[in-house]
Figure 1 (tube, rainbow, N blue to C red):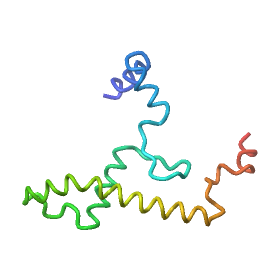
Figure 2 (tube, rainbow, N blue to C red):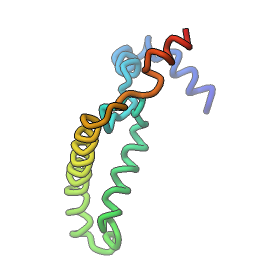
Figure 3 (cartoon, helix red, strand yellow):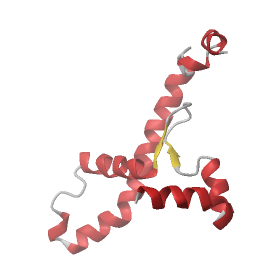
Figure 4 (tube, helix red, strand yellow):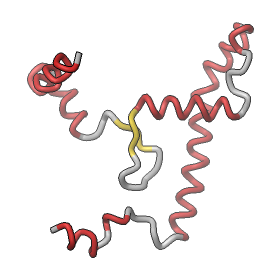
Amino acid sequence: MGSVHVRDMISLQHMHPEVAEDFCKGGFTVHNSQHPFSAIASDQAHEQNNAALKEDGGAVGLTQNPDAFRRWSVAGPEMAKLIAEFYSSMEERHSKQSKHSRHHEQTASIQKMAS
């Protein structure tokens, strides 16, 4: 399947230019914070949302109760969004208080060494 994937990626610009453009803009990642270099793959973000819900009681035992599972399925993504917003607001508050809110490779001295 590796050769199929490579072929698909090579032909992406011609076959689906709008997808290729979004891909080049980073549309295949999720940004959970405003910190540089903090993007993660969308499937990993989905797993993190599931983990956040499971920590708070989440899906334990829901497979035996269809009504409870339906409620969790509807409310779960919204709960994950609220939890993420809370953590994001805490990070913003912390970064305003911190002098080190940039990635270490963004400092002038590191960039000068690289050039």
